[in-house]
Amino acid sequence: MRPFQQISRQALIDRLIFDDKVQQAALAFADARGMPREVALDQVQRYAREIVPAFNAFVYFRIGYWIGKRVSQA
Image (cartoon, rainbow, N blue to C red; front, side, top):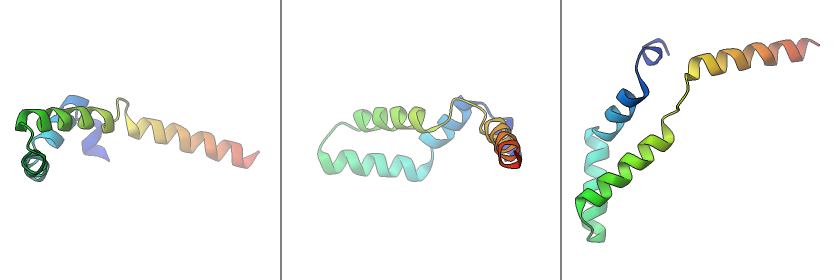
């Protein structure tokens, strides 16, 4: 988890968008449906922005773990 703490959200989105397998899948999707490749790549960008969290997951789960631990001890 440590490497992800220091990486910005945009960097994670870029890594996902420009991953070779993602690019190949997007181009195959576009070819199979006869759509322009740019349209498929725009969809990839939208999906990437949707699935990459806008918050620091490490902090979120660390606080959630602490709260859960406190509640369960009560």
